[in-house]
Image (cartoon, rainbow, N blue to C red; front, side, top):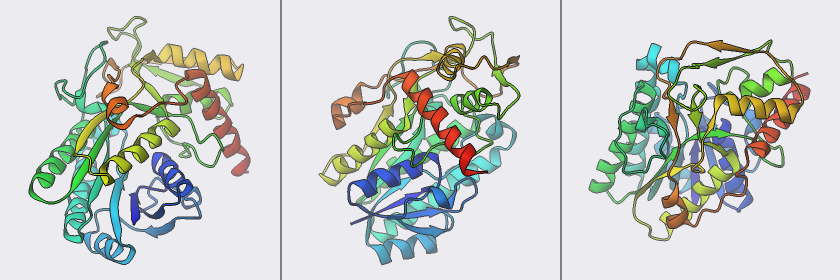
Length: 328
């Protein structure tokens, strides 16, 4: 059995490849390297450069490598960009996923795991959101992901395919062995941006929105260590292979931190009081989104090992320092 990982040269995908390879799985990575890096792909995986939406290519890979499962990470993820360029997101996320799912069905792939997002809930408020909460995405990014969830449900009802959807909250940190991390210099993830500011790679960082209806006026998010996130994927794959029914689950810790709290943690861990500017809100950003994550624990037996903001920040800082030496 072989697992096809789309977007396996990217941040989360490269960590998933490591987790699968560490478990002795045969892995094929499909990535167009638009935002990913070939050097981030573990040497134990077979790498193919191309689009996840290329049905002919995917079909050939499924047949040649006897792929039984697809873990789909490929896609565009920047919320404000999705507002300014929605067609890019419906092409890269929704349309690409549609083609990938068709190729999976035609090739007889048994299991499909999709990386979705908490953005499907929209502006959920301060209370943790459960999987049954109202789905009201406020950006094309969130809607493009929700459309793929809907396609998977419809396809699984019509074909012998089981699927798992994981709705991510805010992913951060890096592999504890420092084999991978968030490597895109232009990434918009808060902890990465703050780490870059702490290391002098940015002259300052911005807090976008200080008038949200939250305790300190800044956005509140549920931050999850990337290693815990990919462990949930591995458990989900085993669950599906062992006959588990299709399932949709949140993947977060169930506790939120404000932007100001994250910035202060980065300052404390780094020992640097870097410059922070207060900026207007960005389009599509909700005030707060925190996971009610009981289901993933109950169904998969998931037990987070890195549920600590200081540890997450420390891992991110160490990865940024590594990148600085690597790119010299």
